[in-house]
Length: 236
Image (cartoon, rainbow, N blue to C red; front, side):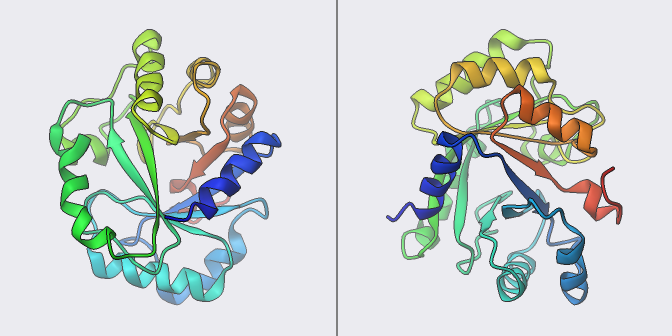
């Protein structure tokens, strides 16, 4: 399968260019106000991520279709489960929840998705996904019934990220959870970045320009922001 979008990420990674994805939850996204939303996002935005822990397939497809009709930015699916696959998207993050031990989210959902994915044109990008404690109970924790990793357990976090790479993950995603009170701390970002050779995504709780820049400086290759835009505010 073609790897255009992953190769683009690798190119940006090799050139030291940073990327910014805006995460859109289809259940909270207004199709009627989509153009206004596009006008409000930062100029440096490079990707849209579409997904959520509890949404319907129809909402996902409609959101992807609307975004593709008004923007040239690539749209990546960030699915909460196998039903949230929209064939009009450009790529799909094939997420394995490495921070938990629930087999359903390590491989079960992946198997269920194959009948849809095998005949699609989606670029599938294996992604090691680590949920870290952001100071509140995230929707990911509630849905997957797996606890987040303590941000104090640096040793295990780094080793888990590297294990994900060794198992074939092409991206590592450190996530503090939607609406996190505490973003992923910069020491974790720095140490994980030093350990892995694939692009590093960081999201959850990043609401300000200072937080975004701190994550970049620590080593994040792609930052994900979402809640700050759902709340109809711009980061300052």
